[in-house]
Length: 261
Image (cartoon, rainbow, N blue to C red; front, side, top):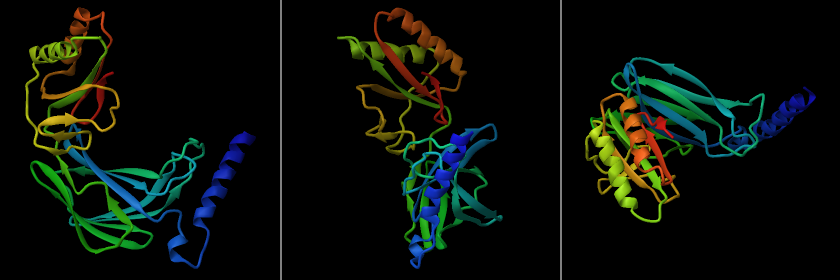
């Protein structure tokens, strides 16, 4: 108990250093700049847009969160990032303070936003089209907000993607082709996505690219509108034929949720 109280006290001292008063307005708060990413998820009601906020600055705990005040009307959404929430228990790795905000249905989205960072005003619009979502800066727009990207391609519903890591000495391409064939026999269909950033991956020259995969892998994507159990069963049957090989599979659904490890 004493250790936990000391931990909280230490965190309070650390954060108070960021919040201490100063004659310089730029140093009066615990953070100066905010990064904003946005992405879509699929719910039972349809597509929903999410904003993911993170500070450019890092802190001694990776589970600091951002405190916000949100006012929304039928035409406009006003978001004020007011402070940092200090957790009771610190995850002791360096990291930014973050906050994920689900805005609601993509179809009913207010396209006009104001984001306040340290009383600095940033006007912008979110423009939703069939294939992509783009952010358009308005005026005024101070220099305390940064967008991770200005344009995001929309993932068609029913898209499944992933990659295989295959570790025999030979016949890797042959084994990978057999894996895809097993999925196609289970009802998967080949599709071609336009080039661009899809948040979870990129498409370049009609091929899928993962930025966080360091090992040699065989990436793929396809369309599938059946129950995921069929793909899992197809993979299990495939493994029986190639059980002598070390094969790892990562398979994700449209919302970026992994359903095969």
